[in-house]
Length: 136
Image (cartoon, rainbow, N blue to C red; front, side, top):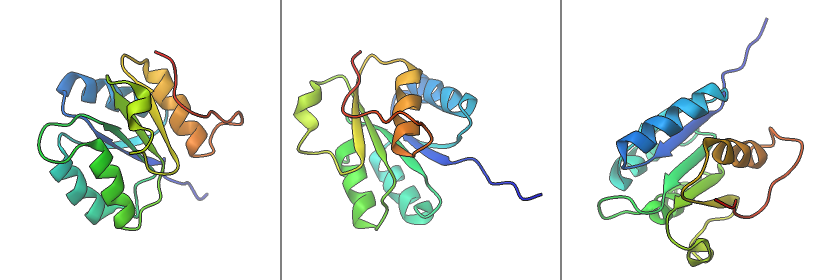
């Protein structure tokens, strides 16, 4: 019997407790998860593993030089087309021009269910498509 591996989701989050919560929630929803805490590490991971990553969940405001918008744009520059979910405590509309195609912006605070539902919709794992940002 042939089994397929769960989709691999890359979480880029500089706040450890939020990172751990996302990792746990996504794993409970049936995803494999890898994590990075900053934009530089994220870009390196995408360069090395981009062909295996099914989705990216990134905080917009990461510590360091590269932010979440940069990480997603660099993934596209590397040829990756996976869906992206941005999380932000800023105004959602502020990122509309920064977001890559096939993405959602989820305002903070959020429930893990918002992330899972958005990711499932973008990956086609949900029969009911979801569009735009989720209310907090």
